[in-house]
Every structure is written in structure tokens, then in C-alpha cells.
Length: 432
Image (tube, rainbow, N blue to C red; front, side, top):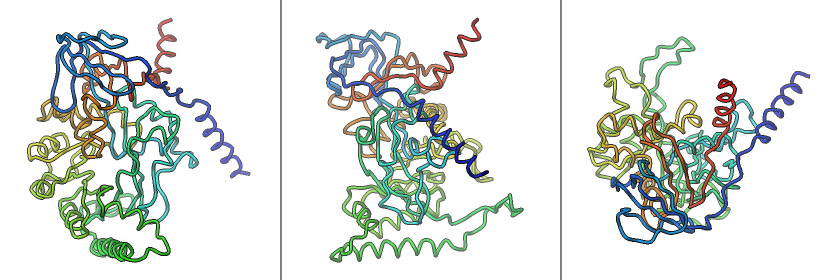
């Protein structure tokens, strides 16, 4: 009887989520749009004051000064005193894979087993997610949907945040495979009364050897007649031919070094470090091997006793100054809800050393290059998708990030969400 009550409660919660589904996706752009007079932050480091941005059929057709004598296309939006940005990109995100943590039926973030390179997060992505919907009012319009769990979690894909289904949402399918590198050191479990100081992981060598053996077996499979077909090894082929990137989730200096050497030994063409808390200690190695970093959540505390108090805030500046291609990711506690704060992570990087436009690139052009989608999005350039927004002020500042309009592939999307509806409801209540 008790189990029946729990099942009824879970079904009720899930049904309530379905009843308050996301707004209907915006229709395809049919009329050209010209935005005139705003300060355009192109995402690639350049700024145009008093700009003119025009787009049609979902593509940007003109980027330049409003002083130029050129015919405006279609509907003209006067945006003097405002700012235009390319849509922000949230990499290494589980958005759309979990809706309600307490409802198992809405949680599809990981699979059983340790080695799952063939698991595709894209087909589990929920375009009806209320959490995804809440990203758009802050300018976060795209994301890399990434599985979790195991040693090899699976394959990520890049989507935009206004679609009927995952097929419509996909910007780039199966862009890379995610590997959780073993920890060379660990802390005691305080809840069991163990000392919390760092200690060596005695199983580290064996865990690395397991990975090495797995990739050797893959190499043997690729050289065979591939019968019977082995789906996990089939998925790994993309790492060898360069069609997929290997995203290695690792923080420690030793782990980063070992992971890079592992990738080189296995002839993996494209590697990205995800997290990279101690990446500033191996900048020469990263630069030598042309390896970018998706840097851990900036709004966090130092992890080691001898770290500078502001190390997480200034890490991006140190890596950029060392010539490393850097983007920002936001994994961690409450990561799906916190993903909307992505622009403010970039704002903190600007406060701790980076130029404002460099900081903007961390969540636009740099991330697009890391994910391999810079030909479509990430900057305001002719020929790219018209995925952009107009803000009343500086979009990296939570006080002035106030979106007036947002477009995904030229479609005029809704900026309403469950939160904005609640805000309006209770604003009216307490005004009376």
C-alpha cells in the first residue's frame, strides 16, 4: 500500500510537469529584420557602436555601422542605447535530461555500466523542459547536452533551446564522447568519520590501465572484420577519424598530464579538457598540444588549502594570457537551474583580469570553436545563424541583463517562463 502511494505521488508530479509544458516554438522567420542603433558585441572580440544588424531566412545578411547608406530590410527595430549579443552557449550541460530530481521517470542523465561511448544524450533531450525554458530570458540560447556517470559517460550533442523535438533542436549531433578521468587523489568521507585531507588513490594505476586496455581492445576491433558488431567500439571510431572530440573531465595537474599522454598514445585527434581546475599548472603542455579547456564553474571556492582565495575567479585570465582557448562550463550542484547564470560567470572573469569582450568570448565564440560549431553560431557574422538577442544593458551584469528580444535561427522566440509568470502574478498581487 505504501509503495502504491509513492507511485501515485510520482505520477501526479510527472503529470503536473506535462500540464505546464513549454510554450509553442516560434514559427520560421518569414520577414527580414533590421536592428539599428544598438552597440553590437560580435562575440569575437569586436564591437560596433551604432550598429546595423540584418537577417533573413534565419541567417545574418549584414553586420556593420548604421551610418552606412544601405537599404534596411523588412521590419526595422530601433535599438539606440541597447546592446546586441550572439546567443550564449552552455557546454557540458544536463539541461533537458532531468526535469524533477525526485521523479525517477523524468531523470535520464546516465546509464548503468562503466563504458558507454555509444549512449546518445540527444535522443533523451526533452524539448518540453521548463528548466530549459528558463535559460532564454538571460540570453542562454544553446547548449551541449552531456550525459553523466561511469568512466565513459556517452556522447553529447549541441542543441538550441526552442524546438518541437530533439531532431529540430539539434545543431550538431554526436559532437564528442565524454571520459571521466580517474582521480589520483581523493578525500576521506567526512560522513563516515574519515579524515578529509587529500590522500593517494591506490587504485589510480589500475583504473588507468583499465582504460588503456579498453582502447587497445577497440584498436583490435577496428582492425578486425567487425563481426559481430560492437556498438561501444563503433562509437569510438569517431575519435580516431577525427569526427568526434574526446572531452576529458579532469581537474588535477597529474590527471591532466596523464590524460593528454593517454590521448596521444591512442592517436585521438581532438581533445578538450573539461573542468581543468589545475590547468594553469600545465599551460605549456596544453598549448603545445593545442588543447582547449572548458573551465569549471567560476563561482566556486578554492579546492586546496594553499590556493589563492580568488583562484577560481582569475583562472580564465591566467589561461587566456597563456594562449589557451578557454570556454566556461557550469557543472556541479544544481547545475541545470544554475546554467542561466552563465553570463554572470563571464562577468566575474571580466572583473578578475579579462577584457569585457574577451570574457564574452568565453561563452560565445570560444565555446563555439571548442564544440566545432563556429561556422554556425558564436559570433555575429554574415552567413551565420541569426541566433542573437537584444539587451537593455550589459548582458554580463545581472543588474542590466534585461532581454527585450531574442531570436533563434531568425525566429522571434518567447522570453516568458514559469518564473516570469510567477513574477507577474505576485507583482500584481502586492501592488493592490
